[in-house]
Image (tube, chains in turn cyan, red):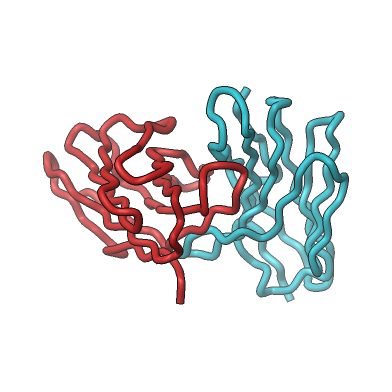
Amino acid sequence: QQQVKQSPQSLIVQKGGISIINCAYENTAFDYFPWYQQFPGKGPALLIAIRPDVSEKKEGRFTISFNKSAKQFSLHIMDSQPGDSATYFCAASTDSGAGSYQLTFGKGTKLSVIP
Amino acid sequence: DGGITQSPKYLFRKEGQNVTLSCEQNLNHDAMYWYRQDPGQGLRLIYYSQIVNDFQKGDIAEGYSVSREKKESFPLTVTSAQKNPTAFYLCASSERMGNQPQHFGDGTRLSIL
């Protein structure tokens, strides 16, 4: 019940296109959903995060869409650039019950943006 | 610059040897974490610490040990009991335990000789 399932494993998008990464979860107690970006040989960096009281959050070219009833959330990267090529991880956590405050990560999506 | 420093960047271990990975933060954060990352996998929590002199096991604590004697330091020891230690190890911190952004170091890659 603590799993977060992420898809696709890898994604190739042309420059200027939209990149879409999806995540699904089972634990209805999850109430914090961050996305992390990781470049090779580096640690992940927080990109954007959402809480379930809103259905969408936008920061620049990055948007999280959240569907509470479907227990799904997704990351959209508009006008994708070669510099966006990285591995993206979704994650989730809860502030109650077993495993409180522990981030559960998806397995990651390797995004390649080609010119 | 505030941040998390992990050292060394690369580490090699012989069979039967314990090794210690360093993690130091100057963000004045209370909570610190250790994760293991394997190819094609997400990050899995090894240990976490909410405050000094306190730490808790994560999902994959077997074969690892930690200490938290100072707020800024959270070293991880990979013991000989960890049979598959080859991985990328990431240290993170957050202001406090809770639904907070976690800040990561740049990792230590551990390999077996």
